[in-house]
Length: 125
Image (cartoon, rainbow, N blue to C red):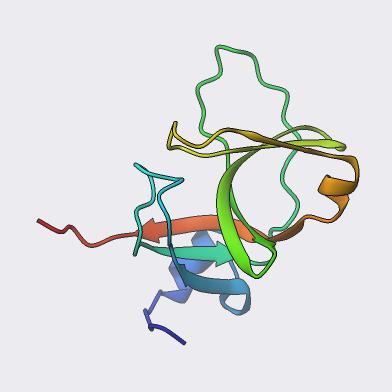
């Protein structure tokens, strides 16, 4: 346990997250900047582990969902773009990080922790 933070049950219900599936994690690294900064706190819905398959037109500007995944000895957070059951594109908000395409065995071995449903950070001057 690194920290504690209280969330109202009615708010969790409103965003369709059960208290037992909610986990908090601290962000490390800069791959999701400017959305997530090192030290930010994220809430992960561990009940939501299957990214939706979406067919989007180039004009669709909606944000892709953010998921946490376990890899090696750590965890990573990405924007998930899933256009079919056998293809997943992992994107970072920071343009210094290249997109990663997962297919076949790489996709089958992927361990999705859950969907990031909330984040917050402290303004530092």
